[in-house]
Amino acid sequence: MPPEVSAAELASRTILRKDLTADTAAFIDTRIPGSENKINYPMIGPGVSENAEQAVPVTAPHGFNLGAAAMPAGVTNNLHLHFTAEVFVCMAGEWRFRWGVHGDDGEATVRPGDVISIPTWVFRGFTSVGTDDAFLFTALGRDRSGGLIWAPSVLEKAAEHGLHLTSDNRLIETEPGEYPRGVELKRPLTDAQLATLRRIGVEEMRARLARPSDLRWSTTPFLDSALETGGAELAAVVGYGITEDRDQHPRLADPHGFSLARLRAATGRGMSTHAVDESQVLIVTGGRWRITLNRENPVSTELGPYDTLSVPVGAWRRFESIGPEQGEMVVITGGEGRTRLQWDPAVTALADQQGTVIDPNGYTAAADLLRA
Image (cartoon, rainbow, N blue to C red):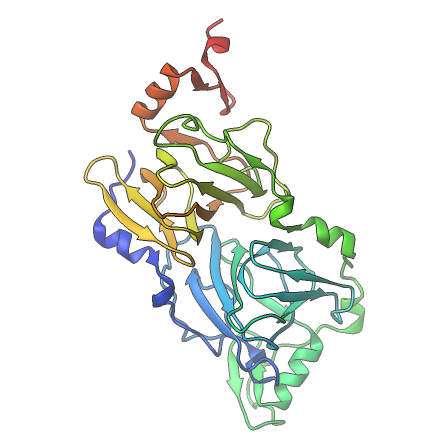
């Protein structure tokens, strides 16, 4: 039985850009010259922040974490690695990503509209090299991501400026160059340990970067594609996710713990009422959208660029592009594989009348073929 979402719950799961709370002390490198102006925004789940005082707007487990980073031009996020997937969605600015133990295995420039997935157990860092409004959303796999490992050089530089990381991932402040007493500090990886890490070439990383020109859009990704209340187009970026087009394939299919797709729709079009039995987060990247939850007693919210909504598992939902320009959003859905949509029976009946049904494998098909 799909849950009924109250107006209060909808409001609690709506994260507007204007309400984001900046965390300027999330990580150990915020004292290192060139990194002190980093701003992190925790949004869904604790992520890998080393600041025990951070405020997280949505704490319900999703199977993944979501945050954001805003960095003026010239500011750097230092080399570190994650144990779970990390995917960046660029909203503004220009970013130079680098990777490898010393950050010299390769570089890639990321611009608005780009999505990049960095492999696990690979050191990565990035610098804002464009405008001062640079902004990235960051999705991190799993509810418990296990923290992170900093490159030895980062721990050393942080200590020189009075910040230390304990073995249980707590930040401790001292005078520059001094070390805290009575606590066990995080030990840097040895040269022998660093030598065991896999190296990634530029060509392999390029395949993990999805620029707008790389996307393959389906104009018929859903059962309701020909209906007045439907008509959204979909590009699968990470995982097969929610597509119902049997010929659509994602740019990246390796397990992330979530799927990520781009969705777009002309004014007045979108996705008809449906439900998903997985966590789902919507990030508006262009235009304006009206999101309506529940079939009975509907509640709605309107979202613009940078606004985010966490949709409760199993809730009925309807997406409608309402701005004068094309609506665009990123859709992140929990789970490793395909996600089956449950359509409102009225949508299913109307699509059937127009000749489209869902086949036993969960993809759209011509109704007359299944009835032959």
